[in-house]
Amino acid sequence: MVALCRGHREGLPVFGWGEAPSTLLTRTQLREAGLRPGGADPVALLVFRHFKPYAHETVTELFSVHRAKERRVPSPAQRAAIAAALRARRTCRTCRVDVGYYVPTSTGECWSCEGGELADPDPMTELATEVAA
Ligand SMILES: [Zn+2]
Image 1: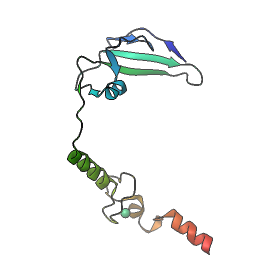
Image 2: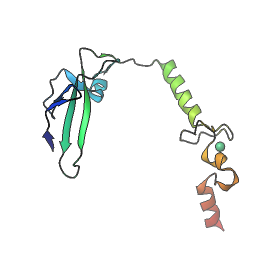
Image 3: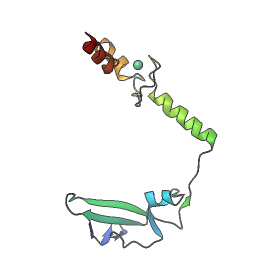
Image 4: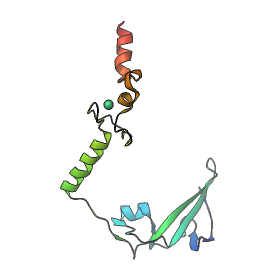
């Protein structure tokens, strides 16, 4: 359930939910249509307010489909490179383990290595040891 808001904000026309022209799309809608803003500035704002249980206002940028560009679809080689880069960001430089989260770039180490001997490398191992004891 949403309420309508209208007017201007930061020089951009404001549309309420369901009021925006069909040529104006949100970033998400552009992506679903295989498009991207392509560096174009938003031309309007979509502003709506949730009723209970959310009282806060949501503001979304609207982009013109006419200025949008076709989304670049990465080639298999590019996708592999992206996957490798993300894997590298999750890999601790000390224990070489893909820890499943991005290790801090300042240290390049996982939380266990960064914490030294104080850290528990695997809570489940300790749990299993406790249960076995
Ligand atoms: Zn580590």
